[in-house]
Image (cartoon, rainbow, N blue to C red; front, side):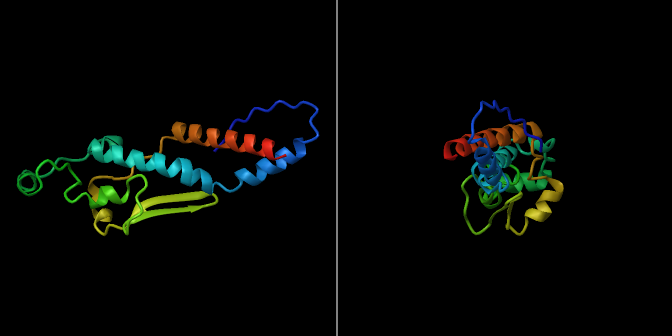
Length: 154
């Protein structure tokens, strides 16, 4: 992902140290994933549940029979929220038995261990696409902060 970083060089002998510090800070993205991306993406997932799949072009309606049964047994619950187990497993800050958040230096995974998620996701996609412009903005802010930290530490 390209990131634009503007720098002004003023005869500063610390520059090589600043650059070395910055390189160390941005080659491992784990803090970016945990502090920025995962909460952002979990909020996107929650918005997808709240809007019944609007971020993935809308979820199909329930069958009339199932909709009637659900209204009797789980009144007021939205599509894909009968028990809320699936939604709650991917909520911001979730750390339950069903929550999956894995980060590595250059990748992150957000998901769920809820057994029926795989089947539900075929008809009603749970994970929305990541908006590239928003991801780029989050990443640029993170790199800018790391550049400031690198300069302060040099």
